[in-house]
Image (cartoon, rainbow, N blue to C red):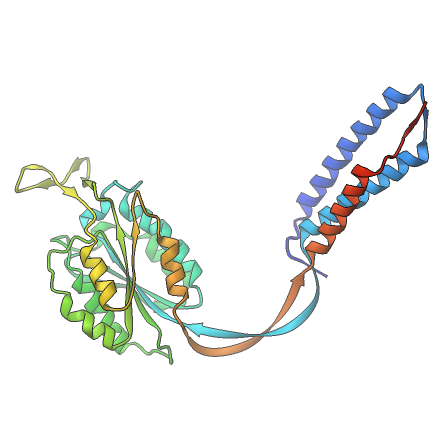
Length: 321
């Protein structure tokens, strides 16, 4: 028998807790009824009944799996480039603790969810750079995500076309190992000072590369911290305000048959993004046989519930007057 949750310490503590409570119950019963005639065999039956369904609950909690069978698992692969905007506006705090810190937290979960796919990281602002090439190595990816900050790239504005061009070039030159499912996750607040990406979308679509864009920020926006102060807008000599500008992100996603998602105070669509990528048909790269066992906890839980119901409804008399 295989146990899905073999937490021995937890089971022992629960058993000790049950024993202590039941000992208190028996002591109180003895104190109240020590001068009355007690039907001992019925009390013992009640005790055995309660011990039985408590044991059933403990076994169900441990998740017993009985029997094994062989199952064929198809290994599907996707190539995913995550392009992350590291311009100064990503330090804005309209999404706490900041846009970039929130994205780093969410991306760690995303990377774990797609552990069977090759994932690469592209960082960009006015220029784009490969931070991590396509890899299956989760540890390397997590390490690079931890180190993301706006000081890694030049900050003379934001050019959304730069990471798309970089991803297209890498997809064309990387060894694909037969993988045909290619995706770019474009993460930005949408502020684009280049506005020359439109020629790229046709090339991306021709190559079958879908862009899923994630807009980060709020429509109200916020100031941009830098050191102990704020970034100042040279035109107004006032603190610069950065706002989510989703129009370009939506257009890119639409023209490449992708989708647009948002991470803001009103929308938390990171899970929808993951589901959309999961729905993409990956390329079958191989198959393998694994031993699978079925968790039979339900049967023990059902027996325990039935015994508990019997305990509640049977009119056992433990005291004879």
